[in-house]
Length: 75
Image (cartoon, rainbow, N blue to C red; front, side, top):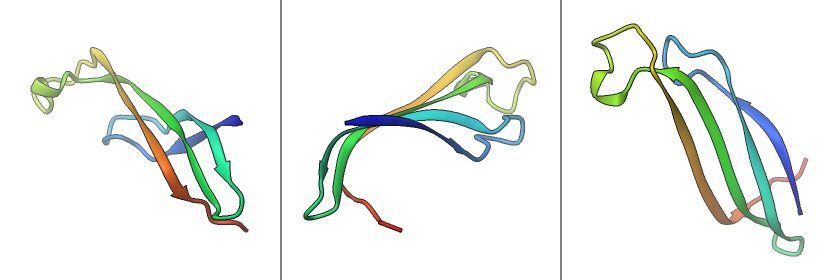
């Protein structure tokens, strides 16, 4: 169907604005529902067990998932 880029706020106080992708694989126009997936990498993060203990970033956290029959708001 389609994909696009979007940005979200910071993951923590040390993260720049994050940019990711959303891919829509199905759209139900009658019910205005979308199905697809998303992925947002958060580069240069501290490893989760070390959070708060070090200021040296050393991993990338990937926020990813899927959505099914999510209501789409038209403008």
